[in-house]
Length: 210
Picture (tube, rainbow, N blue to C red):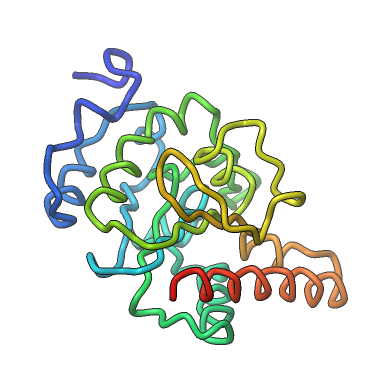
């Protein structure tokens, strides 16, 4: 089966609750065209008994090269914020709404390109399978794209961030800014403000996970 035949990851997702089985199957996914330019699939990582699941938009350049989620600068910032919010890093599962890195060349660099709605929909069966396997108490959407993948395109991140909401995917969902938004802030003051926002939302997550 080719990407053109399916338009969805569903035919490639095995009926299994094993993260190991799901991860292995994800390497064969041709549910959308993104696999063609990515180095490899980047599946979620973390314990099956995780109480909190973090969902980002898609892997970045470092994640694509290493095959693991949140191993780049944004991942390091997330680790720092988790420690400050008192959410044990070894008790969380991290993944992305889209499992392949979408990028465009800029000189010698590969620049992140926002996935289309159709690409997020195509990849949704993998997220559903991860949620079904892990059954976290709280799902955290990192960034507007991840939040819209969970709640729909009408979701307004800056109006609804930090609130404990319910969705079709999970009973407790909190949306916040992506750590990369902190790193992209234009100056030190902006970075401080954005980090404070992220940290406040993660403290709400810690409360909801208790």
